[in-house]
Image 1 (cartoon, rainbow, N blue to C red):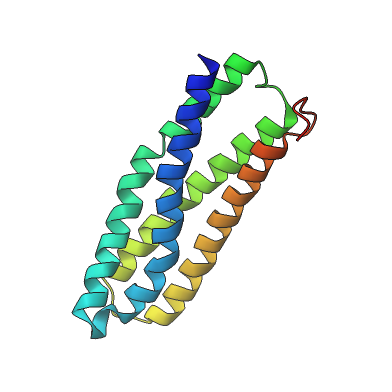
Image 2 (image 1 turned 30 degrees about the vertical axis):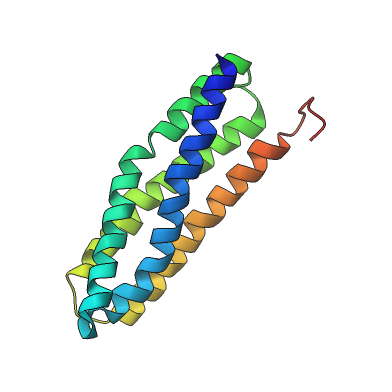
Length: 147
């Protein structure tokens, strides 16, 4: 059962978090160009829809991660607790900052350059948090796998 849970957790992370990081990273560029280009506006809307939709599906990642951690008996391990906290912070940044900023940019013609810069910074932080979580998942301090 542990191998199945871990497989679903890893697949969900790759297939859900990966597209969010790519779409969120590309969004500021196209949203900034949207007022001058219908093509850019369409791409920005699609990227926002990807981020929003995959954010909902992203709930599977921590659900299966926690189930895997429980099966392995590592829920109290510091590396997992740190990963959980970083995942919660990344989710909060996505839901409370990135998605609303994308929505504002889609409906605005104000200073899109400044908005795009701020959004790119938030997206960079979101992406770095996921990199740290992935490294923690692979290295797992105190692991007996030799990693």
